[in-house]
Amino acid sequence: MTDSRDASISIVGSGLIGRSWATVFSSAGYTVRLYDVVQQQVDSAIQDIRHQLNELEKNGMLRGTSKPEEQMALISGCSDLAKAIEGSIHIQECVPENLELKRKIFQELDGLMNDDVILSSSTSCLLPSKLFSGLKHVKQCIVSHPVNPTYYVPLVELVPHPETQPSVVEKTYALMKRVGQVPVKLIREIDGFALNRIQYAIIGEAWRLVTEGIISPEDVDLVMTAGLGMRYAFMGPFETIHLNAEGTKNYCERYAVGMKRVLSSFGPPPEFRDDEIQNIHQALSRRIPADPEHLNARRHDRDVYLAALAKLKKKM
Image (cartoon, rainbow, N blue to C red; front, side, top):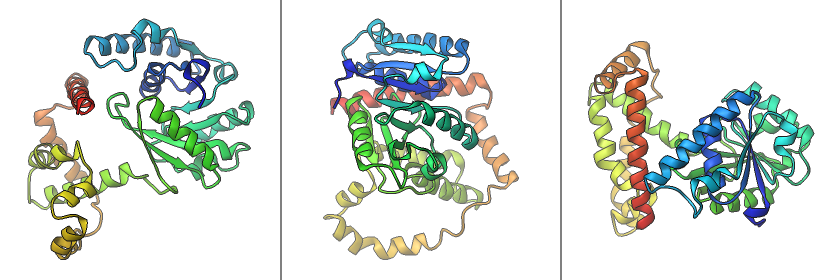
């Protein structure tokens, strides 16, 4: 793979996800060009990245071996799309989650990019076949869906378009590994990808348990944070069942009948009715008022906890 010191990454979109990607790539020594349509937005993003890197160093969570100043020297801003992607080996798109907007930027990029660069989208739910079909460089396109906050939660879902070259998947996988992320490969596209399908399954059953009067929203959260989440921070559902019996085969021999019985009782997806939404919103707002001050404070706490967990997992 190309040495990071000789390679550049282009990031299209300077919002929260674009900024996170910039810190991830620069930490591995890649030159990063951050693009947005308004130069003022780019300048503001670079200032925020500098602040983030200094905070990461202060908290002992800075990736790589370079100081914040050295990483910042690798990051530049640009409001000219052609200049932003010139010479890049990888373009990471991070514009808002809107199909028409993303299609528009991909069509622009399609006319500017060469035959070697990889065009990657950060979309969390839009299918590659919706994003990339019809592009001249469709074989070079892939979804690389990060998790928010990207710096602390390293998973990246790689989802190919039906025409994506296998080598593009492998190169993107290698790049993500090199910058410290944890990539997973989806063999083919599916609505919601993997992470959100699993997340929505949990939300759906949690919602049903609350709206059917079985348990409170606060206690559902405790089921996760003090129960399932404790082990899921270190092992997934398949390893969990493997360890909770004498292997997966023995687990299914013991529990498959019960699992099928419980699963068959789940019923259809929740309707998410207005009254249900309001009740759950009020329950959560008693603990975390839904105003910017309280939400941002809790998000800060979340990131501190995730940083500590990431540090622990790294040591282990």
